[in-house]
Length: 297
Image (cartoon, one colour):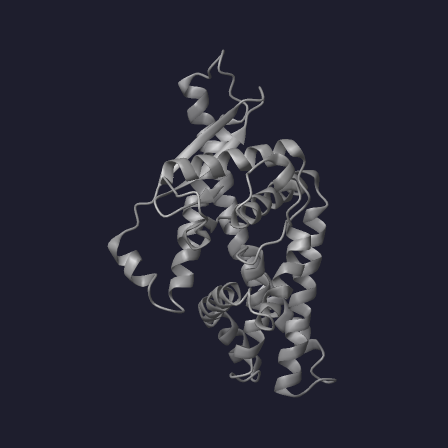
């Protein structure tokens, strides 16, 4: 899935080997457009918007993957499948909320267990952030080993390769794309890591005792951490060509070693088709304008 100024495009390979495309025009409300211009708030708005867009593209993929063009499903069957996937989407949203709170609060309890060894506020915040990082990396490593998620991460890698190839102004062929890195500065995976690092510095500004106040602070500061982390992600992308400052984005790139996998040629072919379709519909010039393109994950 790729996004431009006007719309987002998804390409899927159906069971019969053919490609199907889904186009979603960006109809951003006026109030949302205004909020996306406000630093620290625009990150929250972008996350909500990307989640909503992603859900619609996922719905298209699940509905059309196994559809036989010679034997289309009955309307009732389609509606039944739609209801099922809406249920899955709801579970996914609830799971995300639960995971966010779990990764935010579980490290607090773990760090508190070591209060008798690390009593200082600074030490507690550092220990809490360490546990959060370990939990995050362990979770990503475990799910990346499952066949389904591994395949998703392979397609994730193919998106990055296509973007990297395009930004180098090379022809989008399978051979050229496969030579590119599967890592990219604008990846949402980097954002996840930045929330851990930025959260640590923000938590230095609030007390860790009493314990109930520490829990309350962590919950109330979730949107603050997300907003600041988004700004840092944007900054690292702008600095990626500077000799020294480009290293700011390296931790996020390292995390992508878990959230992306090397794709095969057939997966790269789908990514190229999706990106070319986006360029065609956006009527983008041949010269690259990477600031106008997004990685939606």
